[in-house]
Image 1 (cartoon, rainbow, N blue to C red):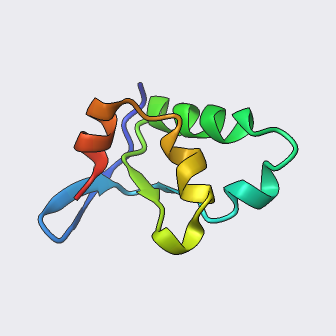
Image 2 (cartoon, rainbow, N blue to C red; image 1 turned 120 degrees about the horizontal axis):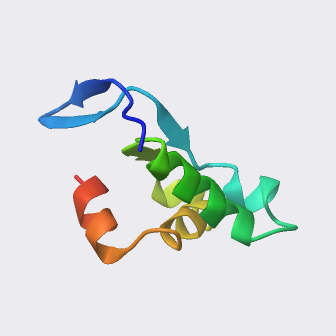
Length: 77
């Protein structure tokens, strides 16, 4: 895993490089597994900031499919 430089947001350290998930449901509509592969690749590269929001649904759900419960707990704040 390659580590991205960290930044502090509130009281949480996150990677300086994040993954925006807003367009997952549109950009990856033809290949639903692509969102999961993209999230896995980002995590493998050391990204710990996934930009999701309720407004992004179902894109946030697509990103969430790639995460294990332990990863969700580690990334949530």
